[in-house]
Length: 158
Image (tube, one colour):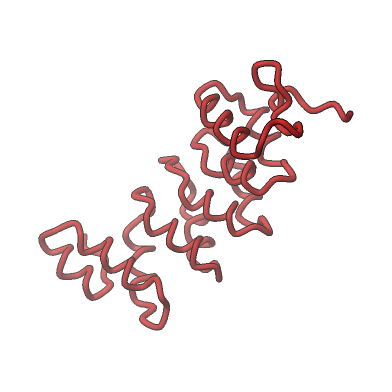
């Protein structure tokens, strides 16, 4: 049997043995969330499993250099995980790049992330032919006041 790096061993159990499902591995990853080191997050980001990479992409402590690489991941699930990342110091270029993704799942995840600047959401709201534009307008208009009126038009207030 191939030897797995230590982050894939949890409580003495191989997270990817036949007796240990992917869902259990993801649950264990969430349980270990606060205790993960940068090195462990890097290893998860390099996993063959898209769901594991997505969990690393969504983790607010994943190193920025890794997050930049994950913007180009082949899996939309990973890019959607990145779009959900609540990191407050996320470079705006990552959001701009994800806003142009062709997969609606990624764009919807971006719209749902409150860390994404309203100006980026407003650009998505003005793409009237796209299925996600109404969700972007709804997010902008949910703020109330002038933002509500502007949001319905796809304009970021303030």
